[in-house]
Image 1: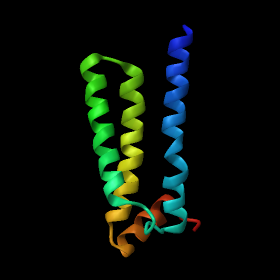
Image 2: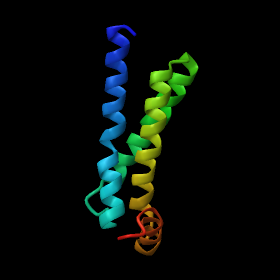
Image 3: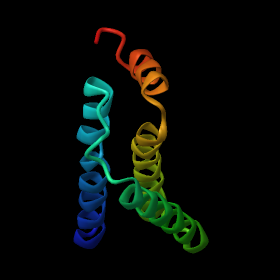
Image 4: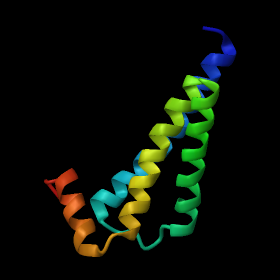
Length: 98
């Protein structure tokens, strides 16, 4: 593996893991008031478009990274859009010990 590809995969790992703490915080606290719906809407759309771009170019680092980021950011956006009762039910399923 050349240095360029290794840097690309490392950047992908950083991008993907950056959403995990926010998603986990939403699950644990069930609080989404400070999360911008508009920003996450644009983020989800951007990741969807990057995924399509990666598919069209058959670029696996782009496809994998943006697919994972799409699902994580879409989860966060969905949790901000759900009414509190439904958000709590989802969080209870994902973290039954809470």
